[in-house]
Amino acid sequence: MSAPASPALRWIVALLLLAAAGLSLALPFVSAALLTIVLGSAAVVAGITQLLRLSGAADTRAKIFRALSGAVYLVGGFWCIVYPIESTLSLTLFLGFLLAIEGVMELAAAAAGGVPARGLVLLDGIVTAVLGGMLIAEWPSDSIWAIGTLFAIALGFSAVNLLTAPAEAG
Image (cartoon, helix red, strand yellow):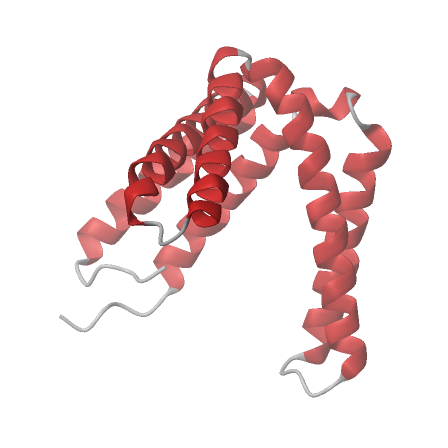
């Protein structure tokens, strides 16, 4: 994320991010449900886009795959919008597996050597894999708070990053 050159604007955006992080941390269930609805909305838009691109496909097979892709996006997106709680449960399990796999990949990158800050990559891999494993092991009971809490932490780090990143050249 690049930081705006104006110090006042940087502080305003950082404070808004911190406020959103605080709300997400205080209300992780609401935050997770809203994130699921936003994700569902994005999937619906992606599905519509895929269906609108049908005429641009060269052959029949490409049109079939694009139509199937669009249908999957639409169905999944509408499901997330209509059933955000159930979708949050599934999203938490998916996130657990995603983090576990990412952590293993980070560990493999650290073991392969040649990466800058190898120790930090190793630590990142361990923390990410353990976090993913914890989400999987405690699923579905952790689904109520996990995504909202992780989102709050990400917003907080974004705010700190915004204040510590060098300003854009204007």
